[in-house]
Image 1 (cartoon, rainbow, N blue to C red):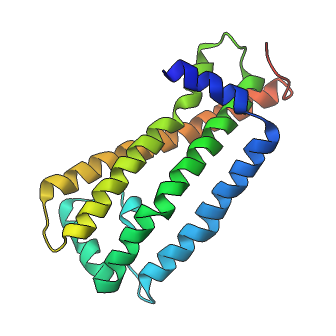
Image 2 (cartoon, one colour):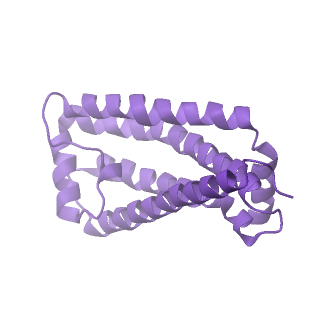
Image 3 (spheres, rainbow, N blue to C red):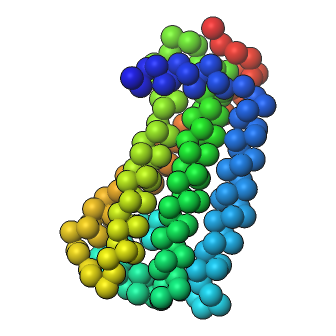
Length: 186
């Protein structure tokens, strides 16, 4: 299954498509998500989305959910069910196709490195599961199931591990593509 997805990413890895997807990623990460975070803060500091709370314990998670208030919790839930469904799809394809485009120019088609272009799928998968848990935590508040909060911590950590690995692969691909003069390798 992953090898077929990897092959598709390589087929779709056209420079113009990579640029469009990267522009969409910049729009989400650089404009839309910070705007949403600003709305969530409502003029007060110290409020951040659960998605960005790395290694938080259940006490911190539920404390943050309480800080969102009566307006913030349903607003954040709606964001998770709309924007945070679309954004993982955008970064999945932006990262996956960028890695593929760079690896086509950085590694021979027989290189074992080429199969790692699907690593962004891990970030996407764990992000969607994380979103389900966030929506659940927001919906059942003031209930505070610690077990579910720990599931969130695991999913959040796994998402960021895959996102970090994706960024590392982009850098490796860039270095190798530069080394090869950005010429496709056979």
